Each structure stands twice: as structure tokens, then as C-alpha cells.
Length: 442
Image (tube, rainbow, N blue to C red; front, side):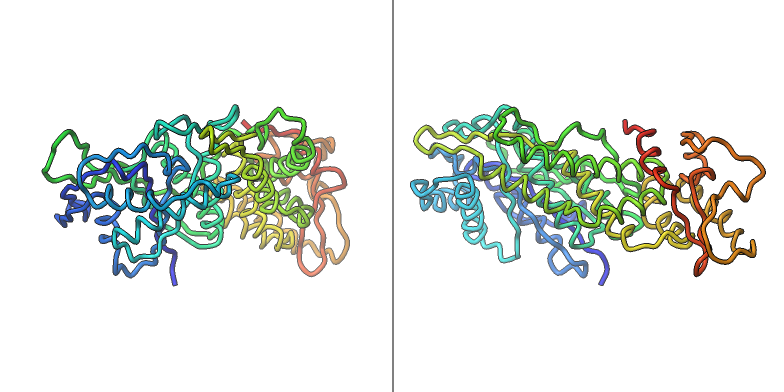
């Protein structure tokens, strides 16, 4: 079965939604009367031959409600009924609050008659969206993107998607803009993890409403793009944003993991396939995803919730770029760690990893590997020798940035060619460390 479609909805508070006639079908004229775009958009994809997974993203402030509704609609009625069943007296920790919000969403979906399987992600709010509770923390401004990327990123690692649809119609405040950025990151992860040639991303939003509008609302495609290369944002200084010394041990452990992740990303950002193979093999015992799980679990555990004062305060923040790069490094090493450093396998990395960074990297690596393949006819059998021995000139055995980039990391003074069961490559002792220390990420 081929790759599937990932559909992501963002929701604010349904208590304020009225009933309208929505036209879905992206211009084909299918009209549905509903209080939410969720129903017509799902109808558009129902019965589709393509496997579709649906995620609904809400804020942990969904339970924050002062009892106000905006007119009569199924959404306001269902929210009122489901919210009335919520008991916050048993909430003693942040995990409990996440569960309460998730249960509230599932109650609403059942009330609305949504029969399709839907996965719910509860992300952290900022400020006081409902006007009663306060949500925040000194370093928590990017936590929504971090936590949603953590959940959706792991989904993309486990399942192949070549189409991502985001419906931003009901998202509030920062949700739509951040989910748009997330969609591009998810497309990149799918490209690298599943070796798909392209990922199509589309964003939907309904016409704006005002006052007592009773007319037709179109669900518009406001953005679409086909991604064939991965996005590489600025590499963050740290994964955790905190000042409390109580997190020192966790911070130190995470910093060591991020140092390794940075090395992996360097070997991807620059065309260094042999460095990537050697790094991933040396990091086989490093649990990248386990490190993320550890940080997120600690973030949940250390979030302070006070039901009496109605406040949720996060003790530290998480940089979403760090989450992304850990997932990206995991994807790259999932392939590279299984490969022996033969010329054929470097070509495979060119096709499955470096082509997703830049098409020019693919052609560069293939050309350099072809030059190594000529040595198969050298008559040598057994043993390893420096690549420079096959050339007239030899320079100092120090990394030369121009040469390394121009020759896909195969600087002849640093690479050894081994003639055992074909031709394989390896760096001379200490060369990988020297190369990595010579390159910087933007």
C-alpha cells in the first residue's frame, strides 16, 4: 500500500461557533450545513482510496469556560453538555489536565456524530484564552509547537505520508501560523524517513464570518506546495530552556545528545556521506527518541497546576527546532547505520538522503563515488591505503573546507580505500573529528 494522507485540524473553543452552510470539495460545490469545517472536510475525504489519518489539535485551555455560548448550534450545545460533565477536583497534575481535555474532545466528537477514528493532541496554551485560567511559564512561548511536533513527528516516522492537509479555520491565536510551519517540518521528515520523492502540503481556511451572516462559507485552499527537499532551520543552542539548577543532570544528558545530533546534521547539511555513515555507526547505542521522551515526560511532570488559583505554569521550555533535528537525525541514521561504507552504499545515501537536501548534492556524490570505483581495476587486493596514493600530489592531512565540499567529503589525504570484498572507504584516525570541528552550522 502506498503512502497516506495526514489531515490536521486546529480548534479553539467550540462554544462560540455558529451553524453555517460550508462549501467543501475545493471548488466542486459540495455544501454541508454544520457548525464546524471538521464535518465537511472529513466528508470530502470519506471513502477515499487513499489511507487517511486524522489529528485534531486543541489547547489545554479547552476546559477554561465561563459558561457563555454564541447562539444555538450543535457545537455550542455539545460543548456545553460535555463541559458540564468535567470534574476538575480530581486534577492533581498536568497529565490529569491533558487527559480531561482529551476526554472533553472525544465527548464532543461523539455528540457531533463523528464516527471516524480521530487522534487528539492537546497542546499548551498561552495567557488566558478562556478568561479564567492562566497558562504560561518563563520559557514556554514555543512549547505548543514543540509538543505538537513531538506527537506528529513520531507519527510521520512510523507511517509514510506523501500528502499533508491542515485545516486552520478554527485555530486561535498562534495555532494556525505554527501549524503551517509544522507542516513543512513534517513534510521534510517524511521525505527523509520514507524515501518519497515529494510531499504535497495544502492549507485550508473558511471564509471569514461576521455578525449574523447566514450565507455560504467556502472552505478555501489558502496555501499549497510540493516539497522535494527538506527544510533546515537554524540549529538551536539547546533543547531545554531553563534556569533551575534542579534540571542540571537532565540538561547535561540532553546536551550530550544534542552535540551528537549537531554532528549528524552537519554531515547532512554539507555533503559528507562517509562522515554520516561513520557517525551513525558510532552512535548506535544513543537513544535519540528516548531522549526526547525523557524530556517531554519531565516537562509534563514538572508543570505546576493549581486548580484553586486556576493556573498552569511550565517549569522549563523546549525548543521546537531541537525536537525537529532529533527526529531528522534519527531518520538519517535509521538508514546510514545499517550501511557498510562501500561506494555502492554511498550512492544509495546520495539517492535516499542527500537528494532530499539538494539535487546538486546527489550529482556531486555520485560523481565522486564514480571516481573511487575506477580503483576497482587498480589490481590491488587486500589492505587499506590513503586515497592520495593514487594521485600525483599530496597535501597536508588537514581538512580543507573547499576540497571537502567539492569532493563530497572525500578529501584524498583523509580517506583510506580498503580492497577487501570490493572497495570500501574509511577515514584515517581522527579525521572525522577534525572535519566536524572545521564546519559550522548557520
